[in-house]
Image (cartoon, rainbow, N blue to C red):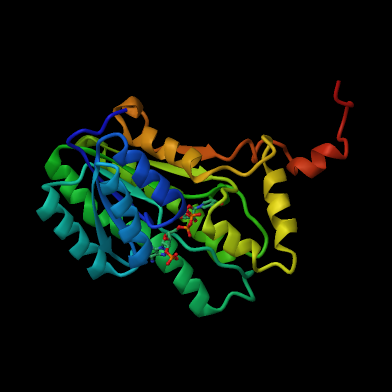
Length: 269
Ligand code: NAP
């Protein structure tokens, strides 16, 4: 996998999966546009890439604000000529069921997690068309397919993202643009730690996150970034409209790991 002469736009690149993806593209020679709403962490990601000998610039963007996304894309194109890859990793977590979620909280989560994916795609796609092709990878979640309790807005936006990705794959295949969705399980990032810290016993939550996966541990941001980079590369030239789960086997046991462990049939050998 090599991205010489390719320009990769990575959102949410100041932290977690987005940052690991930015490093993954940069280490394979891509020019990286680092997008995040957090200036300090975004600048740090870009600076780290430059220190390693790569090429990167930071663009302060709130992906839920149309004009900010539009201006950033224009600036990236004027600075780097075009865009070949979009890896959309910006996102927020929120909690609440269909009653306890406030209307404001609902709108905020959908604005970032769903509108953000739409807006970055909307403004990047025309530049990819002009360029003769490209790849979009949007970060969903295992919660694009199943639900965690008390997460109505997050689960809704992550499910909807799959529809967006399939629509893009269908509508832009003729333009040589592929679109795919990566669905991470429990990944040890600041977002996950923030969620755990809301519990009276955060360590209990972290332990549960490790146990969720068949592999017995949380994933690392790099393990998701590896899939994002692969899907963005020519090695994945025949993959489009796909939802690729990166969850250490979390979704495999019917009824969840705990249900399987209490014994639902023949004893294991
Ligand atoms: P993270 O460490 O919190 O990184 C997300 C980055 O996106 C942060 O720098 C964040 O800035 C930024 N961001 C948030 N809202 C933004 C906005 N409106 N505009 C621009 N940037 C924004 O989270 P992560 O765990 O790497 O998550 C990355 C993606 O993976 C998200 O879409 C998440 O839903 C998804 N995911 C994560 C997990 C997991 O277990 N970690 C599992 C499944 C899916 P702030 O720090 O200012 O918020």
